[in-house]
Length: 150
Image 1 (cartoon, rainbow, N blue to C red):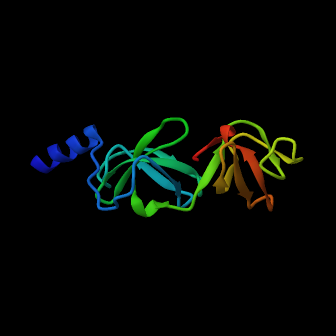
Image 2: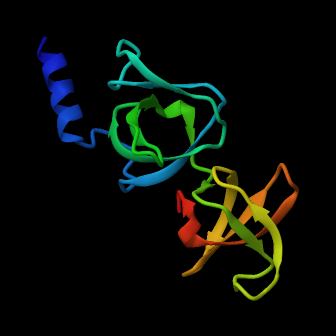
């Protein structure tokens, strides 16, 4: 009973109880195509949602032992086991945009990118991020303001 109360206090306060020592919040990526989102940090907590998209970007907002409280671009939150996450960075296109040859809007457009496409994030400067679209075998620069997960 005492352990349950302490665990609930960690959940309510969002206290970091981990030895990872990485700053919060931070971005990460879903490791597989099927990941359960839970109400609390443990397999005994009910599942509230299921993610079905490998490489989907999320934000880690709290930690408790081997569990991570995550948030997605729609502000949905819940807990997943840390083994379901990876540090390789991906981002989500929030609104239709263009893929540019260089980090300049007048550098020439390579392609139109649709909303909710996921791409590998290679790096960013002040206004643009370099992305790789594996499915399309393309890479280029996208306005940072059109992305979530950077």
